[in-house]
Image (cartoon, rainbow, N blue to C red; front, side, top):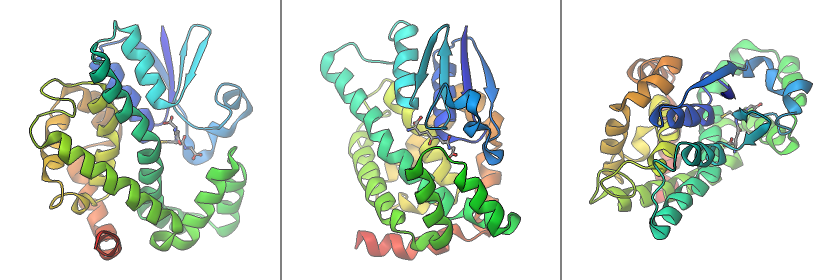
Length: 265
Ligand SMILES: N[C@@H](CCC(=O)N[C@@H](CS)C(=O)NCC(=O)O)C(=O)O
């Protein structure tokens, strides 16, 4: 039986849950409390030394990295969702490899806006410093510290804008004449991206693509209509409309819009 260590609202965990749902695989899971640092406990670091979710266990096999997990699941389920034609297959894999930069960008936008607001309002500077000090990966710890200090003015926001501009341009080109990223059939490429784009919409940041990449809005709606979205994302994070309305009150878009426009000018 497949066993997944995941986070309730973690985007890369959601991405794997979408894959499990699309492939109709049976699995068990354990949700880690990321806010309280459960991912940095010794028992979990023995499985995933970077102290991040998700981690998939299949008997004695430990698989980390959400895109690699998706590929493994697709192979396990008889390659369903992964095109068999070598050229299509490599196009799907390139979308999966884009996820490394896309994940970093989504993490940046989440922590530079909503999470920063929540963390600064609920924790003392000493509590923040000690939770960052527990992070296993020094690169992630340095990034978190800098973003919590500088918010939307963080140097990481510029890198995030670069990655997201490339993402929306590529998605718009792919979706201009087809329903899904690789054509008329839903594939692992679509599975790999829904949680990330959904997160930006939940943060109230859909202004990043509504005018420049309108096909992304249609793709997001189509992806949210699939049963896998309810099973894997909505059941854990709640309805997207409620979250984006709450986030709009936090004025994320007002903070981001001017910088985003300047970056794309
Ligand atoms: N590239 C990794 C990223 C994993 C990652 O950063 N996961 C986040 C949640 S989406 C996490 O566990 N964060 C915990 C922390 O930052 O302490 C993947 O796709 O699996």
